[in-house]
Length: 112
Length: 110
Image (cartoon, rainbow over all chains, first blue to last red; front, side, top):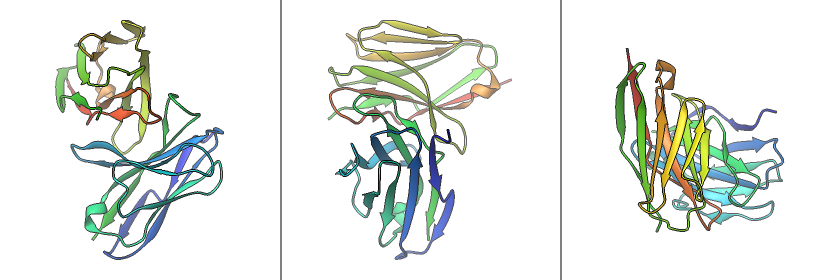
């Protein structure tokens, strides 16, 4: 099992550009999550999907959109990137309520 | 809302024990987790404890939970340079979503 995979690993964008971060899991998990990690801030939840067909906002959703494409895949889109979105983005998944989360390796995004 | 607090840094000598502390505010927490993040990598679950337990031991790792004081600790015995990483405490209560602390950077020096 590959677990949780994320693409790309690194990305540099100019302000105003758009991009989609991809996440896939092969553990048949119901729930998937997007976090961002900034120095000294820990992990902050952007969006999550409790099950296929549902998505909900987390703590810091502004400037992002998500799509739960199917049970395996959960993408995060930046429509118009801003320097404040420079961060490391982690996708995670779990089988459901109060189950352990499994994390992907992260996407490092720099917005100039 | 819920809050999880950790100190940001801990420095220990190789071979010593490390103790990383965490406090949380959600009295309905049912699961408490410790994750490890190595440089350039994602978070990996190290261990977890149910809220009805006081202690859990797993090889070099000992987790202690004081539910009355809402205090969680992770002790790493015989700390090695490979233990250098960021350690995150997280708690999960009545919601889908765990609340993470900001992480403690453990630095192990010879």
